[in-house]
Length: 231
Image (cartoon, rainbow, N blue to C red):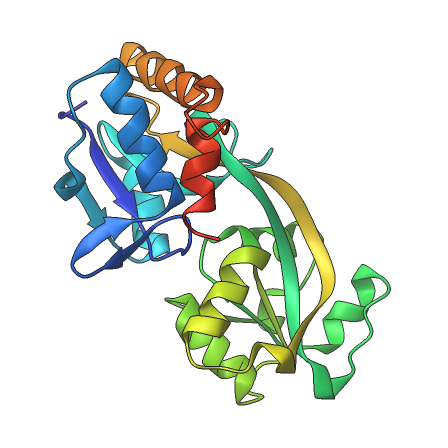
């Protein structure tokens, strides 16, 4: 697996950097899966880049992997998929004191919505017909959380688990925010460039399957123990 280049963004608790080391559910799962099917994984192979850049590099690059990537019909033919890593729910966050009520998709056109370029949040909004002019783009989620807190955007489109993590660990009062609409439910995967070696993808998939079925001494699977570390 050493010939692959891995791109990721800060997307806790799935993938992020802490004390100059990459960690998170998807990083630990990748490590455990590769250890079962190939030489030990070297976390220094991961490159932390803005999501839009990693997305572009994996679409056009050679032997590249992007994670954690939501698998969608739009993205299906763009990458080769290995996983899943975990379930994901893409939602719209709002400040509670705004008391926003979203009952149908057309309601969204009256609001400014924050999203990361080429992220699943932006793609989900565009897929349901939201005008590009209503989407306020940023390079990272932390900026969007701060924009929401300062009322510079009305809504923030992002993964629910990651969004709550960022609000809490960004020093913001999570009780001030709520989910007002669910855009999409899907699964997170490792997205491989189309030119990547099918054998490498098969080895990683087999490793993931083993991690998910390998019951450890505490009665949980190895995968469950990885997830529980970040709860």
